[in-house]
Amino acid sequence: MTVDKKKRAADDKQAEKSTKTGAEEAFLEENASAESQKGQKKGAREETSRKEEAASADRGQDGQTQEGPDEELDRELARARAEAEDYKRKWYSVTAEYENYRKRTARDSATRYAEGRADVVKGLFPIADNLDRALAACKDEATQKGIAMVKDAFEKLLEAEHIEVIDPVGEPFDAQKHEAIMAVDPAEGEESGTVKQVYLKGYERDGKVLRFAQVVVTR
Image (cartoon, rainbow, N blue to C red):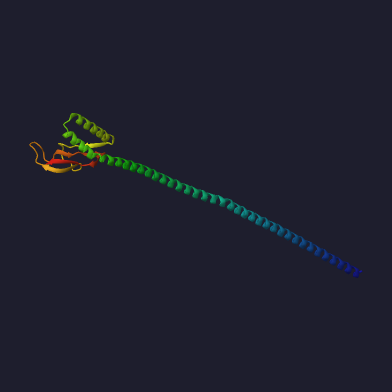
């Protein structure tokens, strides 16, 4: 009887120990499972964080890629506008220079043309001098009339060419228009430096002397 109690006690103890051991193992397994789940959740969170960071980086790169062409286009546009402004300024400069050249050329051409015509008319001055002498010396009325007609035609030519006669009898001597070929004593009442006689008439055009008048002046 005692042996049986001891045996049952030993079996109960063994069973208790087995139960305790099973409980401990279940507890350990449960803790291990919980730790594993925590690790998986943490890993998932880290993976999610990495994905989000990668997506954010991709978005940043995409944004930079999108901004890059816009900035390049802005620079190209600014450069094109600067070049266009430079071309426009050069065009204005060339146009103004050409317009000045055209006006200057036209003015020079007109001046040369007028001077050329004046040179032709200047060749007629000696003929006009001879007409004056012939008219003063001629006594025949018909001849005088004919000479006067030729002289009138010459004077009309001078008027058409805007050429004026310099005939300064009684005027003060002007070295800008007159050439003194002789000096004489003044008569009573005459002032010194007065043109007493015109030997050859002078001619001028637009203030430019074509031929100086040859005069006799009083001392």
